[in-house]
Amino acid sequence: MTNSQPPLPLPLLRPTGITFDQYAEFTPEKLELSNGYLGYGGQDQTGFQLAVLTNMGLLKAIRHTGVSLWIEALDRRLREKLERVEAEAQVTEAMLNRLNRAMEDLAAVVEYVGECD
Image (tube, rainbow, N blue to C red; front, side, top):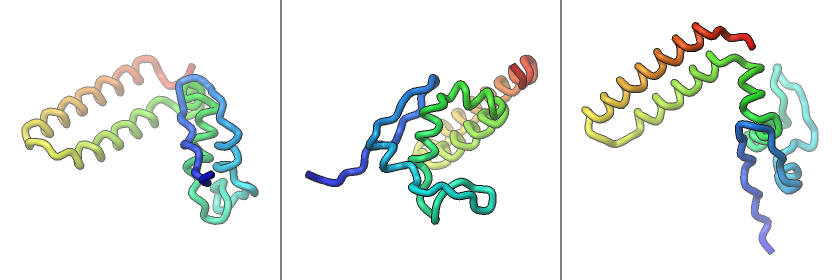
């Protein structure tokens, strides 16, 4: 039998559970606050953070953080990915233009509906 690590929790829109194996693998044995951050001794917290988001659900998470921050995060992540895509310059430029228009449209919608529920 191998000691393989369980898959990372996968956050969905609605709250979902994690497995016991994910809990055992990704929950720090001792949760500490260090310089304003939750964690323990320099451990990689990705699994723990994903477990929390999985249990919370992304819809609830976005309600508590604000849509504008999620749009900014999405914008940054997509720009990072576009920088690494190997494609013709014209295609990359067209995709960047589409991203710019989409982000402008999203910002306009957020401004219209406001941040609060």
